[in-house]
Image 1 (cartoon, rainbow, N blue to C red):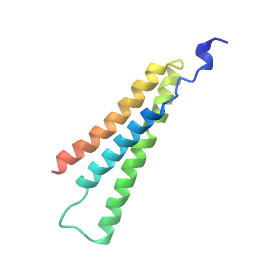
Image 2 (cartoon, rainbow, N blue to C red):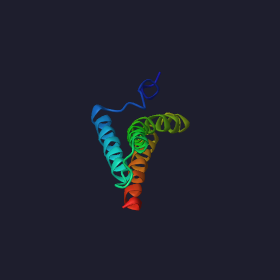
Image 3 (tube, helix red, strand yellow):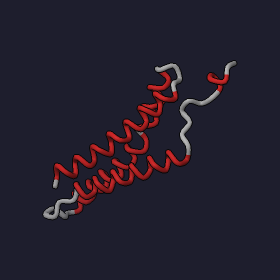
Length: 105
């Protein structure tokens, strides 16, 4: 077997995971800022806002890796394609949260 077929193309280092966690947390914070209208403070709205914050964090953490893995597999185990899709999806999710804040404010 060649070295290419035995190496894992989808390995992500701890520093990259840390960056994804920070991006997901920042996206959740931005989502929480955009989701807090001052006039609505009842329990149902607070629960919905809490769910939106948790969902934004989980979605930002869990979506980039599988999409990157699928793209890397389709591109013949290409690490460059995996990283491109991995960071591209993470950036799109973060920028979507920022756009939501800009639109709400």
